[in-house]
Image (cartoon, rainbow, N blue to C red):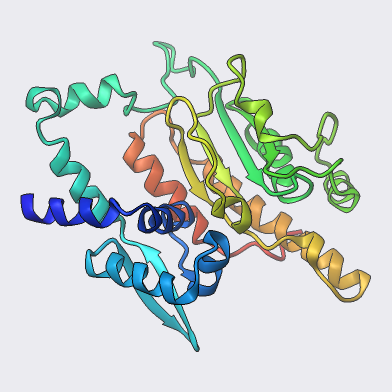
Length: 285
């Protein structure tokens, strides 16, 4: 593995190749079109092609064809093997100590009576923090507010939540009091709550290189099309909001059902990644 590790580190040692790979890691398990990668990174198509080829040869990125488009996805197994090799001597050959000291055990620890010691903090991020992340914040509070503190923010927040999104929530009987559009900076202050989970719910926000979060929260990309960009009749636009709401409702039901008190971090990460692959629920009433 020593030679392989050296080759992988050499490949990732190039700043722009590393940037492309990190974008694909943030979008995992989704596959991303080359054109979208180029737009997000500002790289020329020809230059990006060279970088993607190097990442593919190293086994860090996989390629698949969808119609006439080429899509790329991070190969997490290769990254796992590299990290395993680099940290094989961690804690003098006692990996359990490393996991414990880094907080890699179950997040939702319980007391002797089986009651969780604290609520877990969950942050949902999209660009405008006006519809999708607002849906997610309100829904998680409704579904599992006794176990989770739900928050939302935007990379470039709107002035206020989308009125169509608020009305849909109200029509569903979901509490909307206190919902507002917020900037990420509000959750990056010393006094801000430390996040246990961070989810991006739009591709644009996931494409952006956000600052690292304290405490290394479990993160995942649950990308959903922006209903505010829907075109057509009023009924078609309303259906787009309904679709976003229904997809998030299904995903958050699955998330709230996870036994976070007993799963380790690796299992939880795999579980939240799997949830993003479930595209059902668009017609949820």
